Each structure stands twice: as C-alpha cells, then as structure tokens.
Length: 226
Image (tube, rainbow, N blue to C red; front, side, top):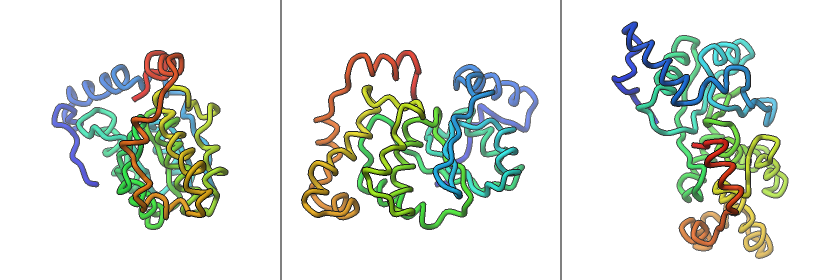
C-alpha cells in the first residue's frame, strides 16, 4: 500500500518539521520510545519492534535491515511522515500493511500476510506502535507460514514479555488462534484450511470474546494502546 503523508506535517519547511516532531514526541508518545524499542528477533531475518525513530531506522539499516513493515494505519499522522522520509533517506523499502489490535483479522488480511512474508525482501524490521499486539499477531503468522512452526508454538509471540496483555481487548488476537486450536486442529484442518473455510468467522469470534475489566484498564488506560 502506497500512501502520502499529511500536508500538515510538511518536512520540507522548518516550521512543518518542528510541528511534526512535536506532534510525534507528545501525541504519538514517542518520548517513551527514545531509549526503549521493544525489539526482539523473531528469526535471523525478521525483527519485531515498536515504532522506530528515524535515528533508530538508520541504526537498523547499518545492521543489515532492507525492509520496514509498518503495521499501523493513519497515514496522515506525524509518525508516518517521519518514517517515510527516513526510509527514503536511508535506502530502506517501506511496506505498509495495516492491522488492527482489537479485532479478528479478516480472511483477506491473513492471506495477505502469507503473501507478504513470501515476497518481502529480508532482512526486515516489522513494527506497530508498541511492538506488543499487532507485531505479535504478525509474528505468529510469520513463524507459521514462513518457518513452519505450529500455531501452538508460534503463539508464544503473543506474550507478556513483549508487553502484550491478553486479558484486555487485545486478547481477541489470542482468542482467534485459540479457536483454531479448539475447533480447527482437532478436525484435522491446517490453519490455512481453517481460515479459508466458513468456520473462520471474524465477526462471530469478536462477538464471542470477552475481555477482563482489569486487563482492559491496563491496555487501554495505563498503556494507552493504539
């Protein structure tokens, strides 16, 4: 997906650059990510992380990264203007693949993720805002589709050590895979067969899932997840 940044964050003008960094620092909570990248190697060719600063992208380029996979939407926001400019400056390929952190991914998104991991240029850095939920979801799909891990094994990528709180609204991601393990796997279906079948019902799964109140308070209020 190709997207143009918002004209509100015009990096060609000094005032626009100041406005962009100010918005990124405070409204995107980037001050929390100056010294903490929540970066973890999923494999020798893929790293998951939170939203990187431009200087962090330069550092990843120096470490061999060729592609940046952006799992966030909202291309009109400051983070995207800075990321797009940094990738161009440092010779990184930017791939936009928006995902949701509180919804069951559509069948098209799951199949699209499979195609993405088959075609992207590695080594790659994959990020959302916090590096906890969408990065975790996509890491599960990456390990399953590209590395051949079982869903049960790959689900370790949705873990508290990555700051993923499964008891909150983002736990719907875990619940999706748990439905496969409870229904699809015992029926002898591969994960891909299950996703392609009528049994894969994102709207129904979302309606069935119930987040715990304390988990939602942590993820929505304390951690202010996107």
